[in-house]
Length: 551
Image 1 (tube, rainbow, N blue to C red):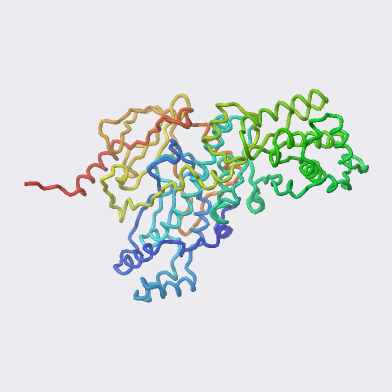
Image 2 (image 1 turned 60 degrees about the horizontal axis):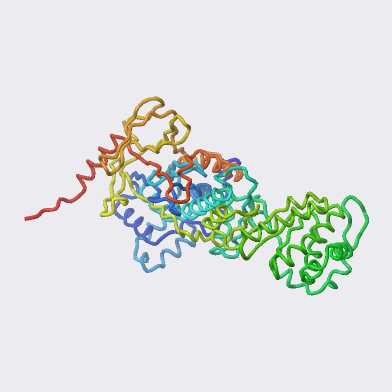
């Protein structure tokens, strides 16, 4: 996709504008402007402090929408008219609105970023924002909003794919996002469809996302479709054109031949359900996949499906499979697969042994691991609520912190060690070992620090604990950030296709040590700082921290 600035579209959600911010960003901007500090050169970092879901990695996403926002950042007249009337701002100098905010854009802002879909770790910046203090402060809330949920949902999706596919191995398992009806509003639903696909899901039920993003869409029918049929008379006149010919046949008549042939147990299935399956088959003979648990999964739904599938096969069509939406998914999926195999052998219909078994009953990551331990025959997982709402952790917790102002490092101290800010502009690298795995991420001082080099020993320090250090001789060194938005030049990188970003996520996951992907007690991945940055950090800490006096 081309990324020339004049071709950058508006953000997908029209609500993304300069007013999509917290009030205190505007009050701070006014105070900066009033004191003449709004043009001071600031550097902010956007990062998170802990990986979500009790895991050891995060998938960074959202930079595509961030770039759209930066490119189109502009207060409208109605925005300014509204701000002037708010109680918090109505006393402000009119020049703040009519001169400063009216002409404000991102033409003096630079942004360095991880690549979309990159594996990210705590404290390593996802975005580094440089520019005048006023505008970079105003960007905070919007950028956090555009990064937090996309990164969280992509990580949640990737963890589920890891669980279902044995760490992204090609095992035939597929995952479909079913969360539209349970998501937090239309934007939450759309974002979930987009970033779960990027995180490794194969399709979505969200038709709008399919249209806009080109994501494959998938779906069958609901229980209501089955319930809407009560008698075989509902389908007695439905005709189906045989595949490869012009001959029309009555599908019900063929189905009834199989029902009579297969015996007494097959004659006691629910007629309304059988009628629904016949109706669906005549409508979608090439993609016949049915929900079979409306009445009785094994004694009715499965048998009705098989009878219709056999009739479709006589007409030149191959059924696709079944969906389970309740009950013991392990037991039911194995029983269904067992009967499919028996019927395939009994009737010399090998296609029956290749039916998809779709499961969609309140599935989450822990359920996927449980299914794997117990054994199952599910081939497709339809996951909704627990994916899109990120049930296990509803927020990622990214923060946006000032690390440098007019060339001087800025630091935030805290009683909580993990909230202490590492000051100054930094450069981050990923160091790889001989086995090809990433060993650790290393942050160095951007000015006059030693750049890690292949084959050269470098000391890597824990930011706060002096005794924790390790010497690394990297076999490969990767610089993590790249310039994505360059002041007046705007966007300076190609925005990748979603399918390419999805593949990149897969490659990133596969590059990690297997122990890091463990669902319980994952191996720890180190984020370290250089010797120089360690000394720099602790010198500033000593200078900024007040000295307790006792007597």
